Length: 98
Image (spheres, rainbow, N blue to C red):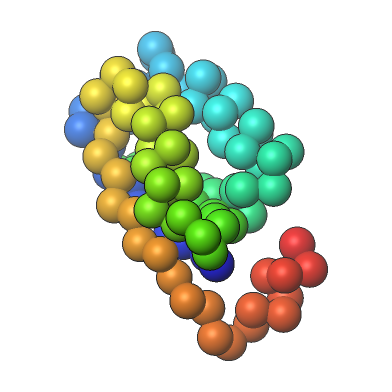
């Protein structure tokens, strides 16, 4: 199963970038190494970003909670997550190869 994470910054990006952006990026790299994160990137303008995630069918909500709680942006109350389990129908074969 897949999920979308929509992340919205609570502070201007300049304030976040100075303190926690590198830790956030390292967290995303680790999720990618684990096979959880498929793709991520910021919105334009920089008000937040989105992630495409691979989560287990058996506990998608628990997995999404762990992703959210592990992010330094969440731990430091710098961003708000909206997590949406996603039942991909078209293009799923391409995602499964990633």
